[in-house]
Amino acid sequence: MPGFESITDQRRPTRILTAFLRKGTIPHALLFTGVEGVGKQTAARIFAMACNCLEDGPGQPPADSGKTGLPDNHKISEPCGICRSCRKILSNSHPDVIQIKPSGYNIRISQIRDLCGILTLKPYEAKIRVVIISDAQAMNIAAGNALLKILEEPPDRTILILTATEKTDLISTVSSRCQNIKFNPVSRKKIAQMLFESKGIDPVDADIFASMSNGSLSGAFNISSSKLLRKRDWLISELESLSLKDTGRCLAFAERLSKDKDDFLGSLETIKIWYRDMAVFKHYPEKIIFIDLSDKMQTSYQKHSEQSLISKFEEIRMARQAIRANVNLRLTAETLVLKLVQG
Ligand SMILES: [Zn+2]
Image (cartoon, helix red, strand yellow):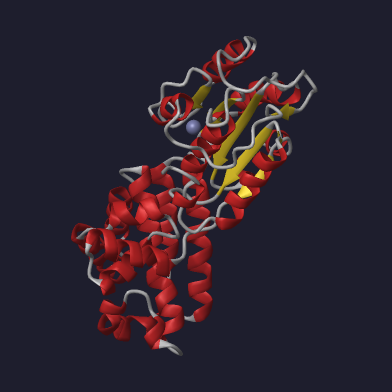
């Protein structure tokens, strides 16, 4: 049954959502934040289903009160998953559950203008119309400002659910009008357990993939392959052998890193773990994540001082921020590699 309990490791946010449903009053705009692949989209859809489930009858919409209220007789805090409304939402065919996603890298102003047009009409059949704007950080300023008009004058019987990695990724005028619900990274232990149980991945490898996934369950499933471990080995051996004297090789490495945005973000995660392992290896060698690389670590960790590792973490953080803000990938990679190689 597709209920809130199907979302792994997110008890706090799902408790908040079910509390809205029990109370019958929902904020006009919600912002779900958290790393990619922790269940934000799934939670948004389950919430839309729960708002519109017909298990206890169609219900009469409450009189216009300025709030987004559920019908008085709506007592559902978990969707049934089998009524007409639930099935339509599950199959993406409900006319009043509207999904907006980036087209390419951006959510364009035309998409938000089209949405404004739809929202001037009353919902067709929903108790509560639900607009889900995924990766809302992909809205440019113009699109964000267009959305602001909707947030300032929320349409009747409509709620907006925005999803983003972090609240600060959105323009503050938009984020301040949404109630923020934070989704946690899924625990490393839980991810490793799921990789082992559902994909039969060796527990040692499952633990490595879980650590590399940065708390993203779907991310862990995507990366859990031997191909990724080969890529990790390549990344680390390149990084450890590069020198500032050979700028040409550094730039060639940066070029390969920056070919694809998601791939680049994944590589950053791998590099971060490698340096993180270096930072802990001296005092707690048993606590490193890439446990299979401990021999290599033995020869590498002394080359980097604690201070230099701290600045490397900062460089990686800044690179990730630049990638998310759509700064030129190649330029970001070149700046990063030259800084990391500095020692
Ligand atoms: Zn239902």
